[in-house]
Length: 91
Length: 416
Ligand SMILES: Cc1cc2nc3c(=O)[nH]c(=O)nc-3n(C[C@H](O)[C@H](O)[C@H](O)COP(=O)(O)OP(=O)(O)OC[C@H]3O[C@@H](n4cnc5c(N)ncnc54)[C@H](O)[C@@H]3O)c2cc1C
Ligand SMILES: [Zn+2]
Image (cartoon, rainbow over all chains, first blue to last red; front, top):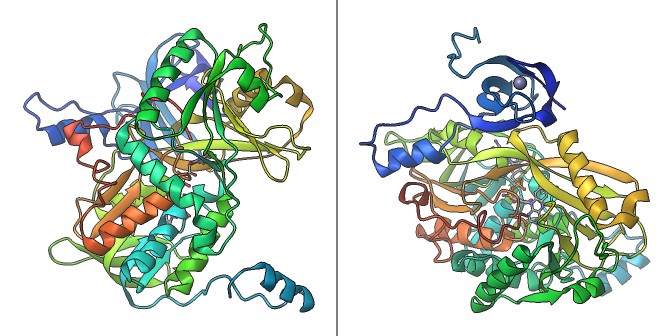
């Protein structure tokens, strides 16, 4: 069971959140080829290790935010707001 | 040694000391025609069909743990072919037909039990979608049939069929040829038969990188026991496919999730079919040992930890008890998870990769046990001939650029 610290509400049980998958994915320009567009929509790094992803406090304040989490230990290394970059969060 | 009743009888006279090892455990050679990474069902079946169908026997399967120790030995053993799209129906029914003869083919009892697969309808909308699915499946030659509430009661009397049930049962649909098979036996049977045909099975040997030629083509693998050269390399590593792809220099449209399952203490026969409820995502069958085998939905965040979260386990068990109130006094004996390789359309990828010389079989997600014979057969075909098997042609990586998905996730909506 993970304890996730919502930036607005503080530490809460994992069951209050939903995961939105990998974050910081940059949308390609409209001139992108089908292959580039497919990459953007479907291809993921899917690392065994540190992953940056989005979570939403669905059964709380409803806000989206970013989490840096280890996919083997599930340890949460950093939590930072949607508009922050990983560097800005000191991670 | 051929397994038979006679061999058992002979064994009885020799205190059962007559049994040879089921497969050889050789030292890896310096080079093979084909190296398959991953000793789960799909990798082992591919090795077997390479030797059996194509005469390619200079083959090694390289497994970092033990054979069948991944999802193949962790799944809930449901086999069925009631998929919605013609491409999937063809592929999965081909697998089911191979399963129907697999015990004889491999001379290994895979304990196929065609006890049927029953999907419940909890609402009028469920009933309407199911009649559409059943019509489509029947047109593809799949033995799917609608069943009434009374028939559901006859197939699974332990269900709560009262109108006041939390999830009222209005009927459902059933595939009679579906059922379960012993998962370990499928891995062991393919392993033994492949080894007998000359395939080397190398366990406890992690693949840590790839050997490449000047043009970027794969010419072998780096392993914990040194480099091994190969004419062609195939990845059959399920939830670890992305890790290997990254080592080989490409990405995949895959996310790895934990899928968990659990079993109760064994009891007398109480459930003679596989039951799945779309309302809860829960499905239950009774093992030949008598345990209730219970599965449900994914833990919906990326994970490489082979354990499920308590929150999902709790909701799966709550769903089980809503369906089968009489199971409330059973104790759960074991709970575990496997790391499954989920793609956007819940359909597999079987074919070449962007890296020359490197092929892949992955994307089975929560439901690839039932497909092992077909996944192995079609992977062996492309490895031996360089051309995709016609059954695998629709299941290529290109579909993630073309958008030509076979979206089973959004179709019949049955997982596993
Ligand atoms: C709980 C659960 C329930 C399921 N229920 C069903 C079901 O009822 N019906 C159904 O059809 N499917 C089911 N599935 C899905 C099914 O188990 C899988 O799709 C199928 O077993 C995949 O087989 P595989 O051979 O591709 O992978 P695996 O059996 O996982 O084999 C991959 C192998 O690759 C090895 N490997 C990984 N990395 C490396 C490396 N670097 N070097 C060497 N080896 C490596 C792993 O150790 C592993 O043994 C379920 C899965 C789970 C987890
Ligand atoms: Zn919050």
